[in-house]
Amino acid sequence: MKTTVFDSQIVELDKHHSDRKGNLSVVERNKDVPFVVKRAYYLYDVPGGESRGGHAHKALWQLIIAVSGSFSVTLDDGKDRREIVLNRPYQGLLVVPGIWRTLNDFSSGSVCLVLASEKYDEHDYIRDYDEFLIFKAIKK
Ligand code: TYD
Image (cartoon, rainbow, N blue to C red):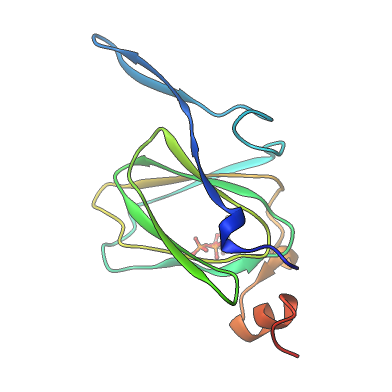
């Protein structure tokens, strides 16, 4: 699969602000995400030094949002790497299929919301980095 880390991008979500009542942000299909959201899940209470992810998906698209606090996402396509800090509830990181991702540096109380294009399917995971390089046709 030929996707690269440069296919993944920050999506600026609409932010509806009220001085008195706070903020509200929206994720809408075809405007903010190019997929139907079939599943949402969230990571929370992640200890400071812990890292999550450490895998790639064959077909899954995701939008990752730091709805509270901050963490960093490292994207890797087998050739290039990008590290992106998420710390704004009105930004999402669109992660295309075929990208190895690792999440770390979770701030205390942070919450990572993930909107996903498919239901949970362990067969869609690549959890071995060598297998990932073969999937990317970088290694035989
Ligand atoms: P995993 O995707 O490996 O977590 P992370 O990459 O964030 O470290 O999932 C952790 C566990 O949760 C694993 O046992 C599978 C389970 N899980 C589900 O049952 N459904 C889901 O939608 C997800 C994302 C995970």
